[in-house]
Length: 95
Length: 480
Image 1 (cartoon, helix red, strand yellow):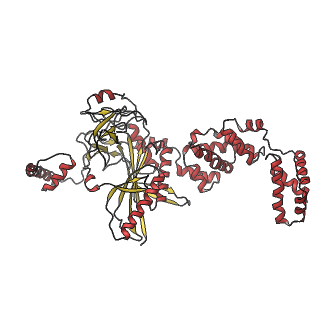
Image 2: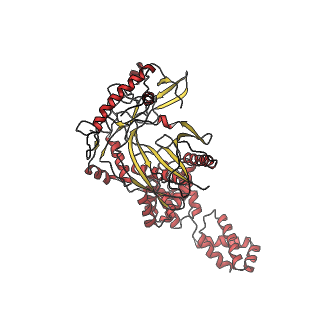
Image 3: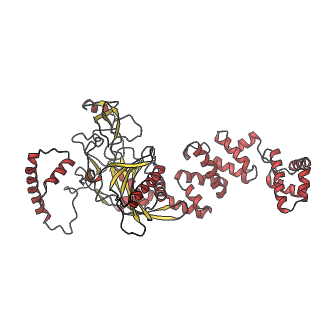
């Protein structure tokens, strides 16, 4: 399975990863090689096998519905770049 | 051309747990910004989610409530997108294996007709935080108190055909989840929000048209208006030979219009994959059966029982069974006064009238169900007339005591003493000789009208306390 350069650009945009123009060719090549391994896996016969959601042969333990956390806002906000009125400030986002 | 409206709804229901879905933070509404945001909610490195058992239980309750298949093995997935109020860069949700599978949901329209709406699925997920775009020196403010609040997203089939049906669906859903006690259903606080998928197709066509999605509508009224507006917009485009663009739109209540939010093609590529930080959720038959035993009587069953047991109309039954608190109130009134029909009228007209006027919920009613039942009992035993009862009800509302106390204190006891009534009748007859002559000369139809005049005069003289049946009898006898 080959992947096109424009798909790499789209995935990079979705993942917010910047790939320099002169590197896109190489990244595309490497990912194509990885997908070659995926092709090998895809070729395995999986008829009748349920898809695996987790490699551990275990199930999720559940937590009792209790409030166990206390307010530690001051400690968390001491390491934030910008805060005001208890809010974390980030570059302006408007949709 | 005649267009058919096709609507599917996604309801985001906030579950009434104490703590968040994956952390031990409180979800109390209205706390100061970020005081309920723990290291897990902030996505600090190395933090791991641990699933809240109560959220699972509530999802199962919902599934049983709509008779759906319960996912005995369900899986959480990551839904990836970037937004500052989602610090992990993904929302933990369920994609391929939700906890609640297909089900059916019955709704009743205003005209009493019943419709079945298919439920595609319902899955557990976490809510995001809140972005505030007021001016913080050109920056946005982020409050993560809401991040990690447990949500159940309930997805319907595109079975809804009008704004009326959509509102009926949401009201019935609201009723169901509050009956189950799995959500407070407080729409103003965002406990129930709704995304609306709408498309049009020519009547008779089988394939669906291209749809637009309206995000985050948070009141019944806005849902109705948003749909009406969107249907008009799409019909205008299609009539002009145009094409609907698949996109996400926002409903602006101030301007009563929808407008595009973002292009879905790029933004909607969420690249779901199984959440490696959580193992599959496996529940067994015994767990589901134990939850099944805790379910209360649900709205549809209660409505049908009210119709049968109390001989109520379909309309009255659905109003009274609309919420569990109201239904319980009504049944307490019936037990206290032993007349289901009059109890239904009083609860719907006087009680709900006052509550709506004062914007109060049934739980805030200053008149208890037993007090209202006591008042109705006094109407039934002819101690007071219905008209006086309204006056007593007002006094009860003001906290002046029980019906008996108020009747005694204000001297409102109905006059049923024949001697006293006879004196009143004689007085009115003597004072209105002209009307008496008219009465005696009139035919039956006209007599009925004139009789009303005399009754009115007597009721006025007695301040409404004369027993109307006895007055009628006495008048008929004396005027004959």
